Length: 206
Image (tube, rainbow, N blue to C red; front, side, top):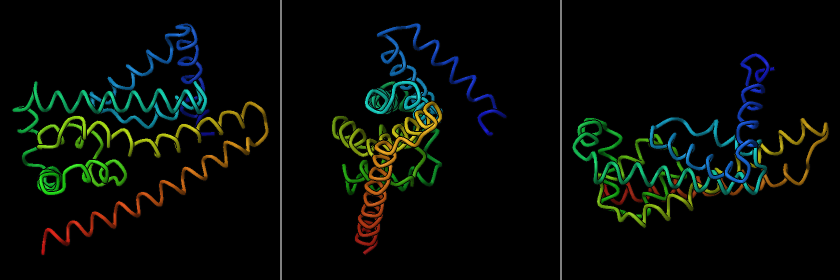
């Protein structure tokens, strides 16, 4: 119903037609489209879901994982090397960034991992904010990629399962099972990350 009201089905069909017209370059173009949206601080959830519907679970996870990591890395580099003063002015009065800065200086890579699992800070804020901290670039890239992956799997496979269910008129149980497993794993990781964060904050205050 919602898809019909907002014309999401038509838009997805148009996007699918455009991607299909690109042939083998379709996934590559989608990766750069996703990265550009990330650098522009646009919400990536719609593109993540679209990837599952357009490419299926395996290719969808790959293109979103590459696109989100590439975009996050570019935003980091822009903040650190090309627009440091502008980013600093933008974030200096942001209480969440000050907290991120302090905790990253104290806890390093673990904060990159935690912020990718627990939505403490807006995704775009974290991308640009980490560029102003002392965290190593490759440490940031690796932990960003790894800890964004469970959420990527959940959304992409879920979108793929929903799309296949509509097309076939039947429930694709293997994909549904994969979604449930991804949700359980992500829930466990988020709870663990929250516990680690609380312990780190308590230690810092002590």
